[in-house]
Amino acid sequence: MKPNDKNADLPKEQRPFRVLIISGSGRRQYNCPGVDGKSRTLMLRMAEMLPKDWEIDYEDLGNVYGRAKIQSCNACVSTSMALCVWPCNCYGKGSWVEKDLLWEMDMYARLDMADAWAIIGPINWYSSSSNLKLLFDRLVCMNGGNPDENLIDHKDPEKAMALEHTELWKEISVNHLEGRTAAFFCYGDEGGDEMDENNVPEILQHKSYFDGAAEPFKNERDAYAPLVWQCRYGGVEVPDNLWAHATSGKGKKYSDNQAEDMILENEFMKTFQIWVNNFEEFVQSKGKVTPGKWRAYGFKASTNLWKEAKTGIRSWMLRFGITPENSSPEKQKQLGLNMDSTLRPEKSEGEKLRE
Image (cartoon, rainbow, N blue to C red; front, top):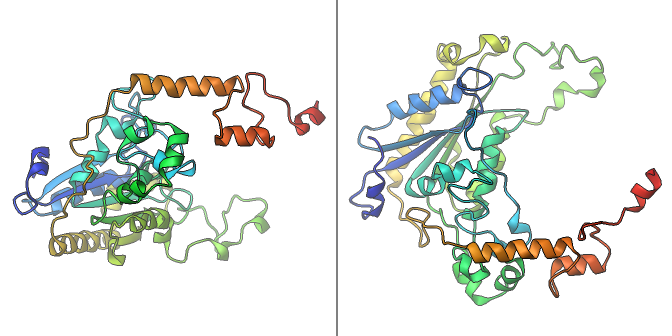
């Protein structure tokens, strides 16, 4: 069933199940490299396999020329958890300056509306794809993020630091997507045909640099462990049997290991089929999720022209070395920790020596 966002207003007893399937490969046929990734094929296959009375929402995060990109996380949490706003207000929809794919696709609302998420993606250099990593970095706001930016004048770090020490903060800092289910299916090729009998890259000249027996994961699914544990940290349930891995194209050249080759690999597709079946069974038995108090669905961003202007004024004052009283930049300046707080920053001792 195609998703109907209006159903998100209904009591959970009256609305259908809703799941969100995400394809995490960066490859798309409309862009370099001119071929869709395997995760897109698996995403579309899964959408067909799930119950017909479920709302099936899906999204491909692959790169397309001219399309907005997922902007990186600015690590507001490291300044203050209260500075990290739910949903993320570092960026917004329709921006001409920093166009953000998550906001353009309403991903925060779609994650909120879903009872469960299914994330499918490749293993790229012992980790998830950069697009999936960007997505989950930006989802830090679901883990206790500030649901009311007015309390910090949109993005005032000093007010956020102060808020974090109040009783009010203890009440409003909650896991906004808690109770949902997330499932992860990752796949790899174990080096294609690049490895020798000792699991060392054949073209490597300095073979002593690479210990083939010490590759980091005994279980390849652990390449997605950071994403899984972020979900669990915020109360998004990831059962062990919904965290799976399969290998395709082992011993083959990359050019011989495309989606059309993958679907002919019986063992790989059987593993995927079991994962989808486990997902359906678990989501059905668990039941629909009650949304949190502060929803991304239906969220309307405030008009913050003056507040954003104040943030801009603050940044320009810092460029002239004018720091807010008792602020972290002021303390760092006094301790000589930051020499970039003026238009003409002083050179470090290392830079002077190099001259």
